[in-house]
Length: 249
Image (cartoon, rainbow, N blue to C red):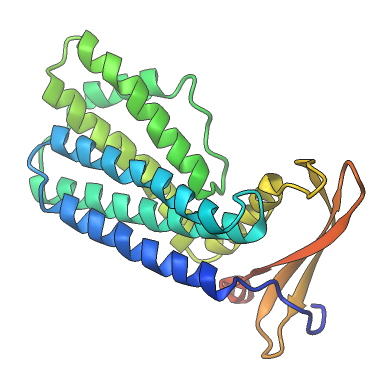
């Protein structure tokens, strides 16, 4: 592990924005959770929670570029908060309602909604999961209209479980020991992929990834980058709060 190195810190303004909008997400999820009465109402609430992303991205963009480190970190933090909240909403309804899932309806959704939707990588980042959920919901609407021999309520309940399975997979990568460390590292490269150089280029090459140590011994990753077009160099860092999971393997 490298010796102490300077870390890229979020500004106070960025931290405050995350806190304010995370609280707003929690309030919206809590309010929606109290109004769930049927699978259709759950899906409507899910759409409402997912639509909050546009507001969050807009708020981040008012103060920070969404193609820069600070803006991307804000959006990623709020994406995770929103997806965790949505998972809790869906799981809470499924547990309370205890409605019997029709296996045939679930199989139909697995068959119809998977093709054409980009498969999640092993360690997905929040925006990837958001895209998959939105894509699945859009593809679901014509299925209900067509029926395929099922009542709408049966398909709607199957859809609740379908979305919950996607969210469960994501949340497990953020909570399961060891896996959550690799999830953090995968997100580093997803951040780099979205960075935009001041020259206008949208591609950085990672020239070096170094495991470093802060003044108090906390581990973090430093990525040294170089613009593929103009050659400009920069470094960014990422906290590794779950690195010590690796030491207990």
